Image (spheres, helix red, strand yellow):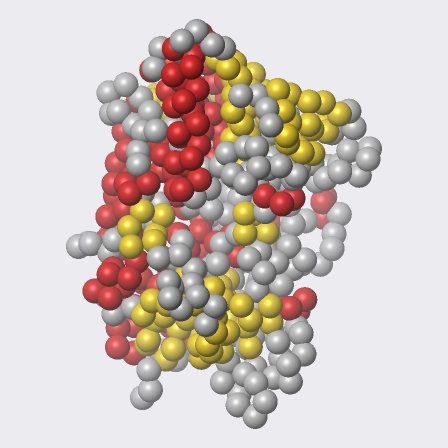
Length: 486
């Protein structure tokens, strides 16, 4: 029996997780090929520590090729361009067009045939959505390890100037009204505040958290209610209390319109326009799909069939336009299989959410100011593992997907840790179940409060440090890696 050919596009949390389990479970029954434009794996959650100078990029990066070579996975350093799910002309073999990014081979195109394909390309960091946003403009980012290192250099330079008596203002948050990943911005701001205190210059700093959330603590999940100390507390109160205790100001319901050196302009949900001066701004960009195209057998463009307008791939969710009140948890994907092509799947950020989780809002001028659904970290890995199970079972004879991982049936844990010293740090820890609220099962709050709680303290900080080392061990596919949970 010929080997099945499985192609995984992307080597982030979702792609790397899926490829690792596919090869472990299928062995010689399948050739597993990973396509990624970058040579390294980046443990992105720890970029936060890189961004304040606590870690160096080499501590959150490692080269993929040697790891894959040891485990029999083929690695192609290339960018995926066009999917051909029906093959081309008289040849029905599906393939993907790729373009090499390997030094010395840049721009060379080739065809990569597949029997199954998983799109785990993650997001394109859409800095262009806001004029002046990002490392090429007037703000910083922690979305990649190199971005985070540049942010750290700027931060540490300002610390030195503050030690000489200068006062500085830091603005941290989201750089557009449709951003996701508020959790990363939240973790960065608490780390920044912690480091300013640790370095003895907190009294010289003003810190402002600028976000598109309707209230802080929304996190793109329409907020949560958490059980804490025997009481049910909205995440708004939890987050505001944490900020107030640390002297962090906040501005919510904001869409950043543009940045120039030392100044950002933004519109709020009431339609008012504002500006804020800063000495350093770390503002996350909105995400969109990486720009994959698709063509049918005759060369006609079918991109709109496979992908949502955002560029993310359509899977088995219900994408029927509905009023926000009509959306149900059952609308969310369960198998992540494309409805038109059974051998196509998407995982992590690459799949298209069927609807927002937080209530959609726009200003009187028509500007959307609503967080997009989060799909990073733990959910990405859990989805990828379920898809890897399904592909494995289909190669071994199952007629369809066998595993599900709906975000409406899945919990998640988040640990926002400040500092990386095990004795002096702290952390805000939160669990949520399910990620997408289900008011049919949990009519009061949309979530099961037995599994939704939050705490602040040293224990969560120890867990975050442990997770950093555990997940890098797992990602390097070192002994017993598969026993470490997602």
